[in-house]
Length: 574
Image (cartoon, rainbow, N blue to C red; front, side):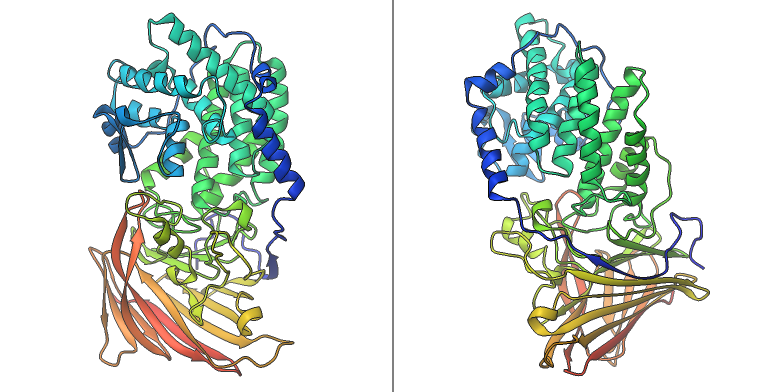
């Protein structure tokens, strides 16, 4: 039987999961936001940012999450390194960073301070950090603008300025120290005005979290703390589903949200104050949801634009959260199902994609699966759409969001949910019907979605069964004519199984199966009951945004107007 003590109890039976009606932000809301950003350049906003100059921080919280060693070493060598992109520090115009948006955010958020502190002592790192900070202050301290003062960048910056204060406040230059402390206070006042206007989800969560942190680290923060905690409670209510998963359905956003709350916990700890119950409760739900997407190697799966995040980072963030929990096995709103038995972990996307305005790198991945055997991954998704950098171009990132980049069925060479020219998600999956059962013989999961109904007239139904010993996964992909619609035409389909790097496939003599040899791991066999099986090239993106060549199994067939079923088997044979 599957592990009975892992995560929550399984709720059997059917349930429809409907994506929220996504009409986008109203014209009034967009105009109001534009006006708010315009006011940043006015004397009115400058007046709002004025106040007492703090003489010091009341405390310096610990940052228990390690940074990226390579990026830290790059800073010591005189350049920024971000997802393989290098930029000499001396050549940067901080007032006009000509860099990809995510690289700009890396600089403006001061996340790089964590990377630097990971590889340098205060004596080694302070001169580097201070030199960069001086340049940033010269360009942005008195002139709020996007993206430097966008709510999430300002929020993260406040956290890293305070947790890494020894690197930026060790100077004997009193004028610089005063400017630095004043900018921390101005950032807090800016967030007081901007947090509630930030997009729901991670951005708003970061902004309100920073307000709460500022209330405890700057003098006279009593009123701000009451204001900030009330705002943070609202932000948490809108950032997470009831089961603890983030509304964007992104593992990266889930990890960052937990990291934010863990850093906020460190602020409460350093001030010896008890963290409010609503934050503790949010963490107690968010951590199991995150762990529900980990494989046997303890790293995250490749879902909704994420790469295979390093197990060490996941472990560090969870440890910093202070939450000890088992993985969540069934997340109906978060949308992922976790089936485990023996050494096998089977992950399934059993929900519609996130609505367009909540996910910049949302993927058409409904009904996709990943499978690992102990520390070895076997079936994966390509992943990495949210990790554009030196190796992942914008065009490639768009391709990694498609249904074909995931281990599931693709009908008529089209996405189950449309990916529009502007990069947003369009029409497609609106309903997922789910039925999960835990039986004496193992776990059974059946789901269907309507992503192809309107355009082509077929419902895709996928049945997955994991044996009680974890050595066998049986699957069946069905294309059924939708009710109350004209009979669909015969349509070609493919079922893709992307293989992890290090998995070597060999077709069997009858071309209806393949042997899958895992490097330093077990031997698995794949068999299909119908269709034509072929091996094609593929790629897989790691957590650093680096693609790795791999291969995929591709079963091709044709859906018939009366319905079509293709059964397949994955079996551990050695």
